[in-house]
Structure formats: C-alpha cells, structure tokens
Length: 240
Image (cartoon, rainbow, N blue to C red; front, side, top):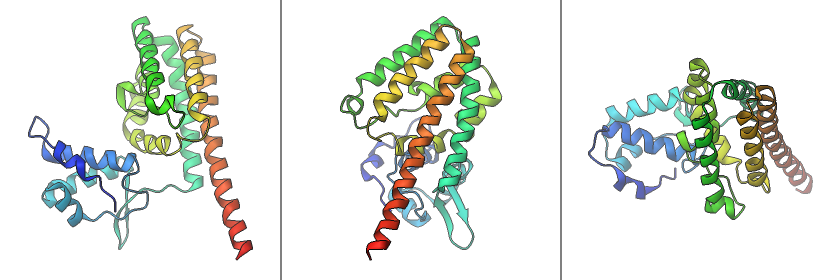
C-alpha cells in the first residue's frame, strides 16, 4: 500500500488532536488515490507510518467507514472502497437529482454577495496550473469547490448533510479519478459558468437543468471509460 511519507512532517501539536490529523491525512490519501481503491488497510502499518497508537487509529478508521471511504469485509478487515460500474452509476444518478435540486434552491436563496464569491471561486479554478495545461480540473475541497458552495447555498440542511457530509468525500474520490478525461476539464469549466449565470439570473429551472446535464455528462464519461476497459479486455482475450 502506497502512503505518501512526506506528509508525516505536517503533523503539528495544535488545536487538532493527533487522531484528527491522522484521520485527515488518510482521508486525503484515499480521496486522491495515493492509497488505491480496494487496498487492504493494515492497522499495524498505518500505526507505524503515522506514529500513532492503535486506539486513535481505530477511531480514524471508524470515521472513514462512516464516510464510505472504507468498507469492512468479513474475515478480511477494512478495505478502501472500490465501487462497481453499477454502483458508480447509481451514485451519479443520486448526484444528478439532488445537486439539480440544490441548484434550483440556490438560485432562489443565494445572496448577491455569495454569487459574487462563487464567481471568484471559478476565477481561481481557471488559474490552476493543471487546468491551464489541460490535464485536470481544480479539486480543492470545501469553500473552494464549486459544487460544495452551491449545495451550501441551497439553504437546505438535509440536502447539505447528505451531499457535503455523508457522500462528499466518496464523490470527491471519483470526481478526482475521472477529472483528467481528455477535453473534460475545459468542458466542465464552461458548464460551471453557464450554471452560475443561471443562478445569478435567478432562473432556478434552468440552473437545475444545467446541473443535471453537467453531472449527466460526467456519468457518460464514466460509462465510456468502463465500456472501453471492457472492450480492451475482450480484445485481449481474443488475442490470447
């Protein structure tokens, strides 16, 4: 299991507990793919790498299970989640519906100041080096995340809890994994701008439609990826 060792030095004795810091480091490693999907989680190895006792480590692992980043497999232990094609499509169907609703509500409820701040978020995305090179989209979390800000702007606490809490890091994991599809970063950026324009115009119906199309396009990219992988497997078997 690959773990980025240079993050260990970032553990500081501040307001956060060591368990909280280790939780965030492991979370980031899983979401960014530094700990690969399907990898078995070794508690002794993680305890050694992060210099933490088993008690706080198990607390962190339990929290990661709550975020659906880890799954418990009988007789095996914890593994990093690895969604099947069908499960991933279901996740994007949920996003398509709920984030569309969030967009409609955001068009009704976001203040002018919040909308102006969201434009500044997109300006930050445009300046990102990976985006400029055409190899990926800006993937910071929380207030720097276009989707996160819209969901927060919906003003619906239940929706926010589901999309910015329970499912957020799992969704980020797959957004990052598929963000480097050729041409997708520029397309996604243009789609974000159109969504924001609809919100700024207070056109909730259009904002919802555009968000649903945006996530639907990402879902189709994923389906093409799996189809390509399956076709390659079939071809390889035919050549053997």
